[in-house]
Length: 85
Image 1 (cartoon, helix red, strand yellow):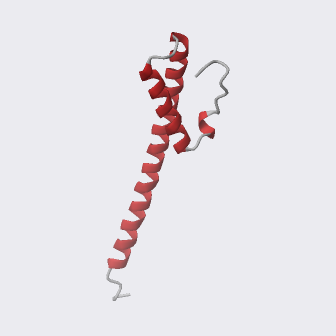
Image 2 (cartoon, one colour; image 1 turned 90 degrees about the vertical axis):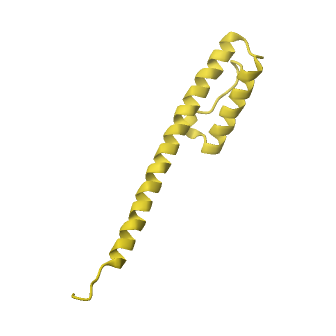
Image 3 (cartoon, helix red, strand yellow; image 1 turned 90 degrees about the horizontal axis):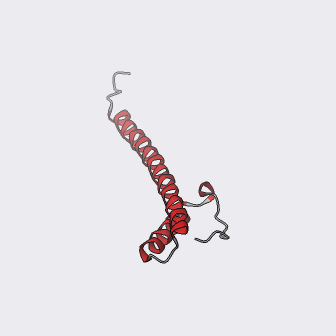
């Protein structure tokens, strides 16, 4: 990541794009090939990407939990004895 690199806002990235960018940042940081300033910028971007990805995963988990709750509720509704109605 050099200073003249145009970075898209994180919220515009798909989950897959954000993961790929984070993976690239980790690779570059592990290679020790950047100057200190560029390393810090890359690290900051990586932290922001990680936070955004964790937030998206939490939202997805919450949606799955809600959907699973609806499935359980539907199953309970079908199991009720309505013969006395």
